[in-house]
Length: 58
Image (cartoon, rainbow, N blue to C red; front, side):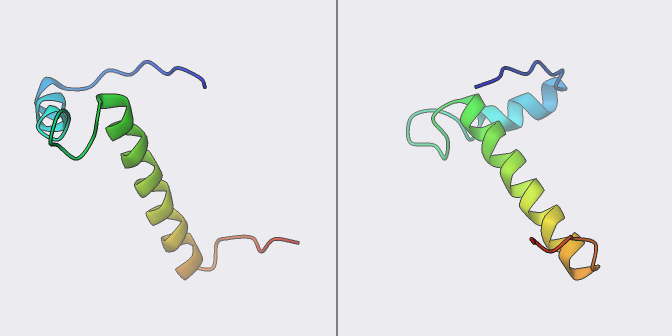
């Protein structure tokens, strides 16, 4: 698995941390960020599909 380094504003990181940890939605920050990326990409694919911008698989 590749590693990526990003800069995140402190306010966004604090908000993220509210959803990470024991009895939270995510076990760690990496898990939360991966889930967010997946969801965002899925939403963008849905938008592209509605706009007719996705190529059909051959």
